[in-house]
Length: 449
Image (cartoon, rainbow, N blue to C red):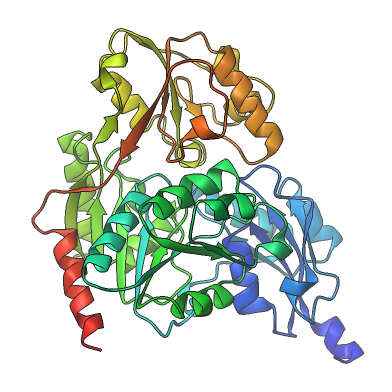
C-alpha cells in the first residue's frame, strides 16, 4: 500500500460487545484497504475490554492487531483519532438507544452506520436454519435443541453454530468445536458460555462457536447435512438462511417492534414462535400476535409452551427461596424474572428472598447497573473473580432453598452449602400450526437434494 493510500483510508470505530463487532470486521472491513478500523469498544459484557484483537485474526492490513477500549468515553476517541465513521455492532438495544448513540456520533463529527445482512451474511454450502429472537431470553436454546432433535430423527446430521461468546484469549478462540462436556473445560468456558453450550452437548448436539465464522461454517459443513444457527441476544444470523425462525416473548409485549435488530428479525422471519405462552397473560399473547401480523403478514405464527420443571419440587413449598436466573436474560435482556421465579411461585414458595442485601463484590455492581432486579440473582460468571463473588453471595443469602434456573448446573461449578434444586425448561408444542411439522417439511427438501 502506498503512502497516499494509507492516508486516504477511512478511519472507523466499531462499537461492539465481543460478537457482531468482530464478525462485521472480518466480513466487511478486514481485507478492504479503503478502511482502517482504528479500534473496537466493548459494552454489555464485563472484562472484555483492554484486549487486542490479535494480528492472526485481523489480517495483513493490521499487523499490530486492533485495540479494544471500554465503550465509556468513545466520543473522545472519535475526536482524538479523527474517526470518519462510527459503526454500531452489538444488539439488544432499544430503537431510542440506537438513535442516542447515532446522535452522539454525529455530534462528534463522524458518520454513523449499521451493517446489514447482505454485507455480513456468509453463504453456506449446506442448508441453514436460523433461530433468532426479538430480545435476549426468549428461549432460543430450547427451541434450537428441539429443532436439532427433529432433524436428527429425520436421519440428518446437524451442526449447531452458536452466536459468539469469545470472552477469553481471542487467538485461541477463532474456531471452537464442542463434542463433549470435556471440551468446555478444554476451552476454559465461562458460566455464560456453559449456559449455552452444555444443554446442547447433553442433548447430543455438535456445537461450533468462536470468532472467525467463515472458518467455523466450513468446519461445520464437513460434519453436517444441515447447519442450525443458534442466535445470541437479538442479533440476526451471520449466515444466509433457508428458513428463518424468530422468537417473540409475550412476557415483553411490544418489544418485538421496539428493539434493534429484533424488529429486523421479525420483518425477515418465515416463522415467528410465540414462546412461553403457558405462563403469559392472554392479552399480552394477543398483543404480540397482532404486532407480528401487522408488520410481517407472510410469517407463519406458531404458539409454544416452555413449562418449568423442578426436581423434588415438593421441597419448595413453604420455604424461603433464593432464585438464580440465567444471567443475560435478566441483565441486558431486561427481564425482571425468569423460569426460576415462575417455578418458585408455582410450587408454593413462602418467600422469594431479595439477594441484594447479601451481594458481594462484582455482584453488587451488577445490581447497581441493572436496577430492575430485586428478587432474583443473575448467574454471573464472566471471570474467576465474578464466579467467586457469585458463590459468596449465594452463601451469604438467608434462605432455606436455592433454586437454580441457569441452563448450566451450578452445583457442579460452585460449592453451594444450602439445599439446591435445578429448574429445567424445554419447548413444548401447542399448535396447530406445529414447529415440528415445519421442520420435517424442511428436512424432506434437504433429503431430496
